[in-house]
Amino acid sequence: MAPGTYRAVMCEKISPSATEGIEAAVVREVPCKAELGDQEVRISARAASLNFPELLMMQNKYQYKPKLPFVLCTEGAGIVVETGRKVSGLSVGDKVFYATMAGCAAEELVLPAQMCIKMPEPLSFSQAASFHMGYMTGYHGLVTRGRLRAGEWLLVTGAGGGMGSMAVELGKAVGAKVIAAASSDDKLEMCKKLGADYVVNYSKQKLKDAVGEITKGEFCDVIYDPVGGEIFDQCVRCVTPKGYARLLVVGFASGTIPKFGINMALIKGFDLVGVRSGAQLGLALTQQGGLQR
Ligand SMILES: NC(=O)c1ccc[n+]([C@@H]2O[C@H](COP(=O)([O-])OP(=O)(O)OC[C@H]3O[C@@H](n4cnc5c(N)ncnc54)[C@H](OP(=O)(O)O)[C@@H]3O)[C@@H](O)[C@H]2O)c1
Image (cartoon, rainbow, N blue to C red; front, side):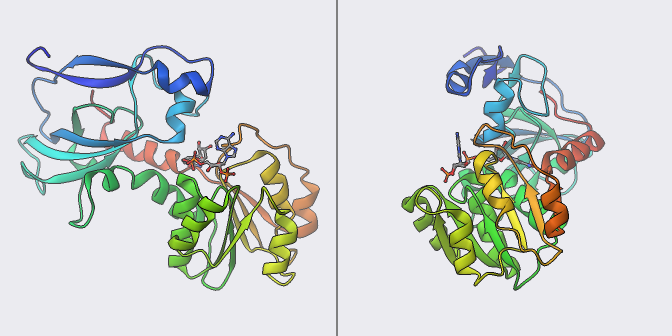
C-alpha cells in the first residue's frame, strides 16, 4: 500500500439486485486527509457494521442516496490516533464508536469529534460498531414514535434480524410484554434468550391466531414491523381494537411495500406510524458539518 493512503470498501456502480449487491463492492486505496480541522479527530478503524440499508444504497433504493463512488457502512468503531487543535474530551488512544450516513468501511476516518462516543469498557469493537443502527432505530421507533409503556403488548416481526432482535431487547427494557415473531425456530430460540415473553413461528402458524391466543383476545398495543409485505398485512390483524394502538412501519426486508386499506385504521382506531431513525441522524450530521472522507 502506498504511504499516505488507506484501504476502503467502496461502491463504484449501482447494482441491479440485492444478490449482486455486496459482491460488487471493491477495495480501493484512498489518500489520507493531510491536515485535520480544529474540531476533527483521525480514527484508526477496527470494525464496521454491515446493515440492510447498505444493500439498498448499492441498488439506489435507499432514501439516502450517496454520490458514486462512496465508501460503504454507516457505523463503526476504532481508536483515536490524532486530534484537531480545539478538540476537547477526546485524546489519542481513546476507543470510540460512531454513526455516519456512509463511509465507515475504511481503515481510517476523519470525523467531527462530537460524532464520536467513547466506548464503554465491556463492549468489543465489533459490538460497539453494530450498536447504533439497531438500538437507535429500536429506541426511536418504540419509545419516541411508538410511545411504548410498561405492561403493554408489543409484537415484533422479523425478530431474529438486526432491527427486530434489538427491538425485542428494548421492549423488555421498557417493561412491555414482548411477542417475538419470526420464520424459524432457531431465530425464536435466540429471541427467548434476548428476553421475549412469547414467540410465534409465522411460517407454521397464522400470526393473528397465535397472537389472539397469547393475548387472550386483547391483541397488541404496539407492533414493530421491519418486514413489510404479507407479514405487514398480518400485523394489521394483530392490532388491538381498543382505539389507541400504534403500528410502526420500520422497513420492508421482504422486498414488498404493502398496500394498506386505511379503513382498517379507522375501524380499529390505531395510528400508523412511520419510523425513520436515519432522518434524525442526517439532521445531526448536517448540524455537525457532515462526514469527511
Ligand atoms: N426505519 C428505519 O429507520 C430503519 C433503520 C434501519 C433499517 N431499517 C429497515 O429495516 C428492515 C430490516 O433490517 P434488518 O437490519 O433487521 O434486516 P435483517 O437483519 O436482514 O432482518 C430482516 C428480517 O426480515 C425477514 N425477511 C422476510 N423476507 C425477507 C427477505 N426477502 N430478505 C431478507 N429478510 C427477509 C427475515 O426474518 P424472518 O425470516 O424471520 O421473517 C429477516 O430476519 C430493512 O428494510 C431496513 O432497510 C429501517
